[in-house]
Length: 196
Image (cartoon, rainbow, N blue to C red):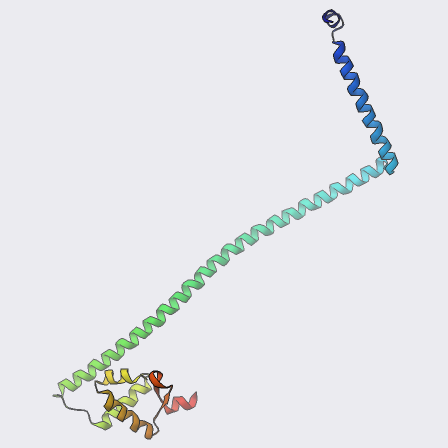
């Protein structure tokens, strides 16, 4: 065999293998042609279908590009939404902080007013305020928003018993009224109560 291969320049076994492959490929081509004829597919129809498929593929590529663009926009909007949520949360926290600060300022203002009243009482050689002057101060504090009996008594530096007697006289004179019951009882001017 080697001599034949050397003389002819090829191996007869390789030639046989190639012939078998060629035969198999021809059979496949014939089967494909029979199937094409059986399905009624001409070369023109195949070319038309191929063109349509290419157009559909191109259209799908364009749509995919749009979808990718929209996905990018959605990502950007989600990031903006996160930033806005953070701003909203910090704004809520700031509002709560400001409310607490305003309450603290009001408490400090009341304490300062109480200290002023106490210093006035001390400087006038512990001279007691008469009931009419106390009624006027109680009414003035209630108009300014001090509605709790405890804060009123603390601010004025008087006992709660004396305060309740004054409050009763102001109610009888129809200058103030109450809102709530028990520990939540608040005193407000009659004019405000009528406006509500």
